[in-house]
Length: 567
Image 1 (cartoon, rainbow, N blue to C red):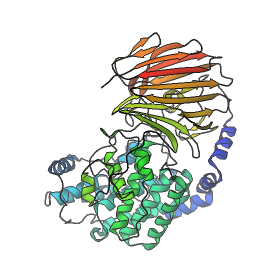
Image 2 (cartoon, one colour):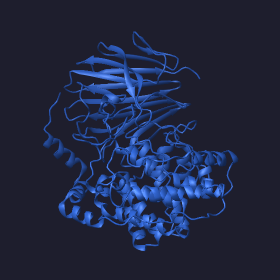
Image 3 (tube, one colour):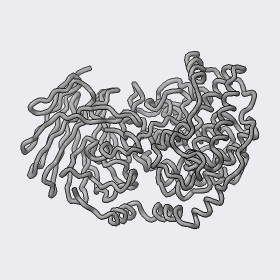
Image 4 (cartoon, rainbow, N blue to C red):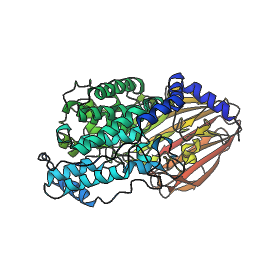
């Protein structure tokens, strides 16, 4: 295996990230910044109730099936384990977030997603005890999460998402004294570490100012409103491109981006603030990728299994309600998914259906093609912001709702699943058993490849000098992929991660009921149908078949022809 000294990886990653995030991160970790944060987050009294109002306004009209679903889900809520294996009483700023286990599911359980649901249930079924259950939930959370101790005060973003959920449930006039005290603590937590959020160049830089804005609106704190607005606008200018792409290339985190921006826009309207200018580009970016039949999207980049502000009860696998809400609130239109109960609850009417999606497109790190029900998506770069996975020139292929050639997904953040995040976890070429870029940590790579677009695809050149050019054509019910290879490599492996099914190895590829893959090269190919693993949801692993084609230099060209039978 290639050896690159750690100091050189760190220096290379810092150079590629650029001075702004590096200096912000350095300041966040400096003794003066830590001292200021510890002073701001010194121990404070646990808020006392009341935490929830006795009465809420009548419910808006909703389809009967959704009313029943809301009441059934609310009735199914049980006691929550707020901390998992993490210490509840340790100071949050110095907490080890990896040693005890995976903090990600703990944070998800602490986002107060139950509050909008219980508010809906209380308004649909007054007198049934839903409000008392919401009050008990907040009282229990406050008692078991003293300020600012334990894992649930460790992240400013988690504080922000909790407040945004509370703001969806209650407005300023409804907020009792205990809830106001909790919101004030959350605003204090968000405001204590702004450099960390801005240094990430990802969802933190969006969610945290949005949460601070929500705190200000709920408490009537004009300074927090102004600061949240200013930082959120700056983050959008920096991180969301004119073509709609987000700095954090991930379908899951792009959905969170849309959810946070849409909820913030709804709060802005609710409190009479000036409206943001319509911006359909980030909505269209995700809309292109989502299967209209199921709401599923390719598992590009990190996938954390979140379903923020899930007023339609769609869950993390179905992005259609998020897209419909974002289309209405951010673009003044509709994604074309019809009446959405979450939008109805918020009182957000649909505008004109957004323009039809183009057959071929290029946008912020991706290139796409469409032919009938077939859709192909190629991960191309450029890499202005840090990449999550070593996945350049990965190809996803869909036939309607069926993901025929797929990304391996994320697995979990702890334990880290490096095999899924690596080049071998994607549908691309791996040279000499090495990743396209070396891993420096869970969330950072060094020595990013050079990359660019071609008329029919894209190219990359890694730091070793190995080059791959990939061209893609959709022709009726066929997809043709050509890979051209050059550089000093000796051995290469081309992988196609297949949909689960009855695949059989053939002389020139694989065949099965879903598709037939034929491979040809200008040198001998060694083909194998191997047992791989994929992650269809956060923390879930399952077997998946992988077609692997191995070849040796001086091979320079491989062609894959995928034929999909008529449905």
